[in-house]
Structure formats: structure tokens, C-alpha cells
Length: 53
Image (cartoon, rainbow, N blue to C red; front, side, top):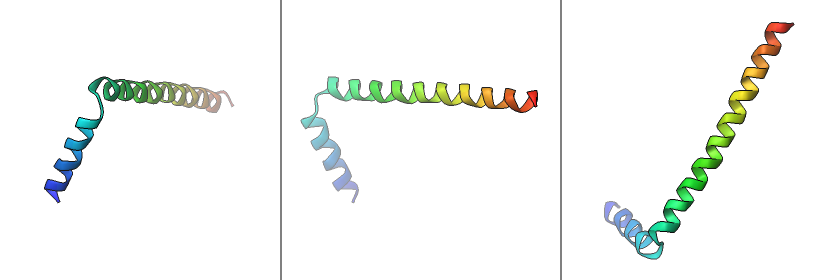
């Protein structure tokens, strides 16, 4: 099983160029960051609305 995982990782590394892998990681990170900021802002607005009532 361990050899199969290493073989799959090796095949992925050979077929994908490093630039495309890195750009994919950064794009995913940017999307997750934007979603996290939106969630934090919504939680802050929700907490403020709870205390105003």
C-alpha cells in the first residue's frame, strides 16, 4: 500500500509541472482566505445584532 502511494505521487509529480501545482495551491488558498474573511465578518455582524436587541 505504501509503495502504491509513492508510485501515485511520483506519477503526479512527473505529469504536472511545478508551476501549475503551485499556482493551483495559491488559488485555492486565496479562495479559502476570502471565504474565511466573509465568515468572520458575518459572525461579527451577528454578535453585534445579538447585543443590540
